[in-house]
Image (cartoon, rainbow, N blue to C red; front, side, top):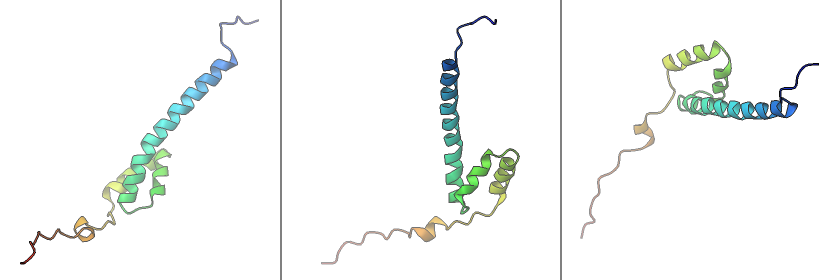
Length: 89
């Protein structure tokens, strides 16, 4: 028989839960910024899921860096403020 060094299946479950929790945290830390970057660039935010595919993530970063961003300039969305005109008496 093998000696028992105090390791039982409960330790494996604790390790699994610990690693699953931090794996999800890292996933959201990577996914959320890419989601907003793709959305602000005018592309589908679902493209951010490709950042988890090896080699395609590097291609997507280069695509995003050199692609034409289909966004409207801020001056067209938000008109220039009109200076305050005091009412005439």
